[in-house]
Length: 277
Image 1 (tube, one colour):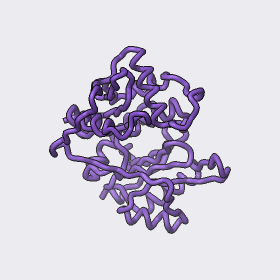
Image 2 (cartoon, helix red, strand yellow):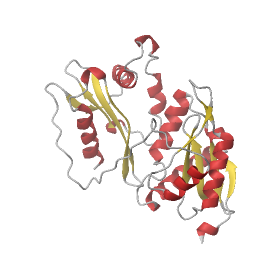
Image 3 (tube, rainbow, N blue to C red):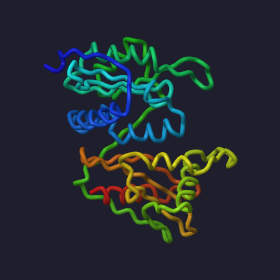
Image 4 (cartoon, helix red, strand yellow):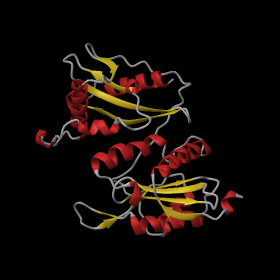
């Protein structure tokens, strides 16, 4: 039985490991009934080509650990997504209480972060509410649920009717263009969406997009924007389509503050569904 197989832990080594992890995540996603008890490939790519490349959120070599059989088959992967945040990716065929205990211990040894305001060490371990064994493990080890840091995951079968989402007059949805002007507009919309209270002087420009668009699943025809009558980009949603699992993933989705409450993000998301289908 796979659950009785002996797994040995090692650190991430090279690019070959990266592609092995991507294949592993695809298999685990399907084995878990297409529920995100593990990451989708798109999230791993986004962490590497944006989080690590642009935000300094760790590195593959220091923040990824693999558990594998004697034959080299992956059974589990532990990774960060920024200091102090850890994620257990486990193949359900290999899952045991002892394995997850070892993975949490490894996270506590290598992936602890330091709070920016408190200066105190901390570690967040991702856990689904419905995952009773992991909840028990973390509770026993002294973890508490953080009310200020919750993640809500939603999924939708594309066989369902896609909602009709009319746009306000003068707005239109289109894919990103390849020119520098569109790149600058898209980057500015992202800054306005996610940093509405930051001074404009802190904006560092659109260079981060160059890295994010290198991710293997990136497709310009699925990088969608809502364009305002003025020509500026008001809202956006990047859709990652995985042709192996036949699943899509949205990251990021945002609307500039001055264009919010007009149904733009909903409309862009719906267009992403239509294109994915």
